[in-house]
Image (cartoon, rainbow, N blue to C red; front, side):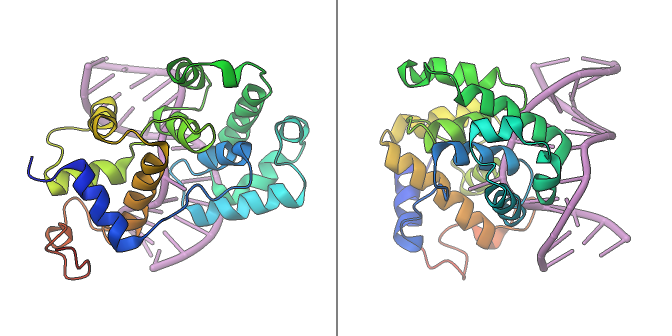
Length: 208
DNA sequence: CACCAGGTTGACC
DNA sequence: GGTCAACATGGT
């Protein structure tokens, strides 16, 4: 492994600067965004969240009552299953014992919610509850493989452990995931591998 | 026109 | 254990 995780983090941070994720006003809004952005561009999620705010449906109570939920989130796609998932996560947010749970317990409980998989659970843990976990996504896997940081097939927990072993700080974990996403959105569109986009070789990214 | 977007689920093998 | 279609809209 010629490139350390911490080194990669520093390169990205020096180049792109602080990202200050997640863009949301409240922890619950983080969770809503996490559901809505499942396999969906953030641009479309913004429209859906705008609609929810316009109709004052951005709290757990209002989501559960909302009669036109499907209509409001339509721009984000998969609107039928996402409406159901939003209600599931809303019910969870009404629980009183969340803050008392250990990170492991909280993760387990989130994963029990129908419609919440590992990436969504970890996004909520990290950006809504400020728990020190790393969010792995397809961007992360693609970038790590290109850089030779990760070899083999996609292994969510394996990649998560790799990062969490080297980065412990919640703020750094937030920034690292955000930087990987922003970097990937701008540069690494090509699939499956883009030889130009290896850090240090890509003419559009002046990493030294 | 095809393919992608800050995934998850359930059926099937 | 792994693989795969279904889910739905909007942008390139």
